[in-house]
Length: 383
Image (cartoon, rainbow, N blue to C red; front, side, top):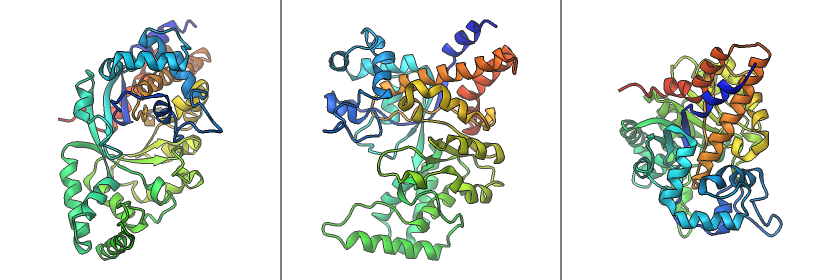
């Protein structure tokens, strides 16, 4: 069967990016650009160029033509042209190529470096929504609240933030791993843990940054978010070197997923690589679980088709979403969106060729995964 209609349909299909970040607006030199290209901290003496990665080659192949360069332009030529265009024009070109209708932006990580949701909205015709990071709110609250009042103060602060947000996010994977007790802690336990946190912070000279890494408090944040009913995102799997990857398998969340299965709150498992097959299983057996392969796609590049197909082996097609996890570089929006569309098209075209589904059904599936599932889970059409 001729796959051309499917190609045309996907190329024009708008995406909802249900997890992403703002952009760096500074002119970047090569080491600064490469530090944002992958999950590495930047090039080093042993790995002198991060352009020699799937992500690096993807930028040169997919993004260079968007800057009026030949595909595979040399890195320095690419960066020179990028600086000539300036941040605003670069961002407009990349976001136009990405074809994203909604950005759901995590505002909790390095906000001082990145565009705000309002600033990003000004550069695109897409809708922009905020995702509130739980740990960031807790760190803001503990800086001003008495430990005994931490629970009440945090709940009030989170409820206030929920008025303008579409979701919450936890980075428990970075701070305590995903192998934690799913029980809701008592306020007495929370107060004791908050007091310990403050003591540990003030015991250093100068006082240590307010970095939340306590299991009791993390569980409290999660249950406080669940009480408010907005979708709750979890970072899972692949990330920078702060993550102990072997402790970030989504299967470790199974007890929590059982405990939350009747609440009616969507649980969004982000990224998941290299545990994406496990995530697909969880989405199959838990009705409230949604999954993506997030930032994995622009990092695996030429293997994106296989990674997405492996997620789709078990995950219900109405439980899979698109996420770029673009951070800092506008290129990551265009790169992720292009690789995602290509991978989804390859998966659906294979099913058409096997007569496993019809072209019309494939188009319906594509619309669900590209945007429909996210629209439903995040209630984006609700006034």
